Length: 115
Figure 1 (cartoon, one colour):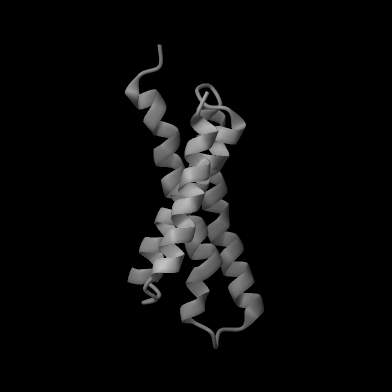
Figure 2: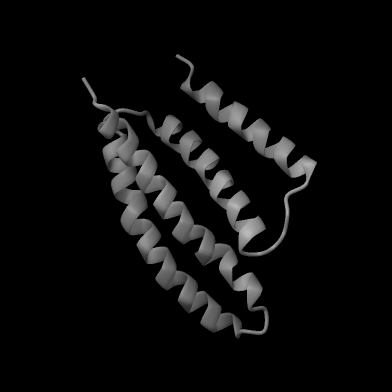
């Protein structure tokens, strides 16, 4: 019988990995004058840490969740991390239509968990 820790460890690792990946993909938007090649190299370096967390998250998570469930979970986590990042780091508030679109994705992820 899986424990709460068994169920939450993959989620926590996915949250941490998504924080790194969000910075790798979008953090450079605050530095638009930085040379693109430098941004790419720095993003690769940040993405390395994302992979160091995402791979174990999916490996451990596969003992309890199906691959589609892990992907659905990851999408919702990505959106939540991005919402915080967009407003707090980039200063770009999300509008009602962004939230509505995110909600539809969350509903899709919920459907994946129905058995």
